Length: 352
Ligand SMILES: [Zn+2]
View (cartoon, helix red, strand yellow):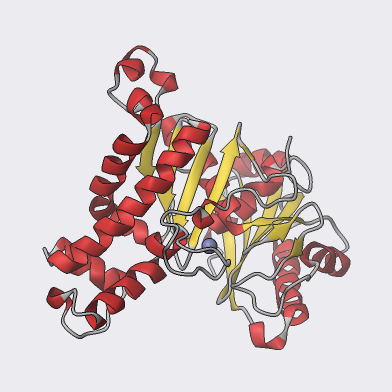
């Protein structure tokens, strides 16, 4: 654990006492991360635990609450606790904070996560979907801040494709908390069956899982001779593509094409100032980029009007739409949970 930042100057301490500290939780299918945070000092301390899925949801809640209480005890003599934010894989019903058959948390269907946490902690907890929180962090602390905008749409390319929409600095969660599922937008109607029940979702082409699956299918079908017979990960495929392997490159081009098709619809629908692509696969941004922009240009007349360097963008820079890689790395979801209490429109941020 990093305790180094506890020892801050008196001047900073006075400022942060006014603003308080928050505790954020990033609940993942493998790991549980709990952090204490202030706006001025950032992450004060982080606790990392395995997610004991086999022990059941109550045991995981027990672990979460134990870590939250430990951080609260450690910092509440220095700062006032401003709130607790929890990010979870979805689908998550808000404001109830109830999970609905989450693919990454098997056995948690119907679990009232917010109620279970509040009962144990005896205080208010704000629960949000992890992809919404990554988008919030990217907006407030990452690319949104760099670009000077308070609205964005983010696609997170990881095991699946997460999505979050931030409007005016707040999460747009939809009527029941389930907005921001563009990872399940149909890209190719006759494509492979997605765990969500639809065929040809964006997630089936542009996630880390998807590029690995595509590689093994093409190898098995004899369509990727340059990949040989070995087993590939998203990272080794990207390395091979950067080194010039044509079959690895093609896999990333195809993923970029699916992303471009999805982004064209999102730009046509919302024309936000910023669309951000994040998650582990974005390390291959330079491989994805050409096909993304080719599809955007081809399929979205809105994009052609408002893209950087368009005639409109030259006379109305604030009206421009940008599509850029995320700035924050794997901490985005945890940071989003930490800043949620500072930005929440109450449990739960359904709509302002
Ligand atoms: Zn799907």
